[in-house]
Length: 478
Image (cartoon, rainbow, N blue to C red):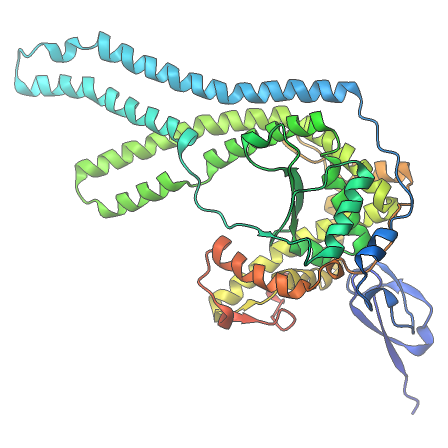
């Protein structure tokens, strides 16, 4: 009986090995893992065989781009939205002052309730309660309305800051993109374990008029894309910083939005202290105080949420326009086809991220084990998404619509704009983006453990970790 001979090749998109009969060599078929068209080749893919030097990375940028024109109306809209956003915290402060004025008015004009001591003691006690109760509740409400202005946020894990001397290829890559799009070179490049990348002014009011920017790169993002896709993503992020005036106004808008979101939803040090106190008390009078205090917190946060939604709605239209503007840089640097593929890939990685966390939570609950390299684990889950899962993601992308509170335009509109631009791109390297790092796996494993402990709150150590390529992903696929 004749036996078929088989060969293996790697998918040009996701890098997963594909086994195929020899007679199928040269054919182009959908990859069984990522469903992208893949040529079944007998030759080993050269792209993943070497780590490019900094000089080779820079030389891979062929030519320059014509920077997109930003109309005057865009800056006028940015200025108007900034002014409206600044008004919202002022409205909150005025609400606090109005409450203080109301308490003062009540204290002065209703003093007659306690000035007279005639009558039965019980009647006087009732009047005292009627006078002091609103003052106490109002005072607590003022305290906790002022709290968001001064309370410190709970401690956050510090991102890992890279040294240019240890990551020459990555810094050269970023510097070349900054030069290409006309954005300032970041003063720092930081890493975290989120599926995201961002470029912004360094935090702090003192840097508002400065040029110190920070690029934050999420390692799960790096693990899931190739260099060409990564170049487009970084160009997109720095596209937001190409206009000095717009960069500073958008910094104000984003900072106010983030402040409202933090104080409205995030637990701060005062909340932690109040919870600890409430657990210790057993006297009904003290418990009453804690209940009143929690009511004051709820009321203050209700007002903050109302203002947050108002600000979010005002700024979202402009933020969508900012995304379109940043997309132009991504399209010009990486090309139209890469833009479309990257956009789809990011949505798939987002789906895989949710499933990865579900799988890890289940594994932790059942066996106290976690993958030692979260970026690699997430990338593996994305590669192993079923055709049905990918079809559902594609349907959601095609049917996506924009609501008033969306910060990003619908994917279908962004892709249509990219096709209309029809740009070839000026950077063509398709090697894994991880090769821009000197030792990506070592950095990823270090940040993975930090992510589990500092951000997920898991009491794990190196003994709890297992190789990412051996961890079960069945649960992640639902």
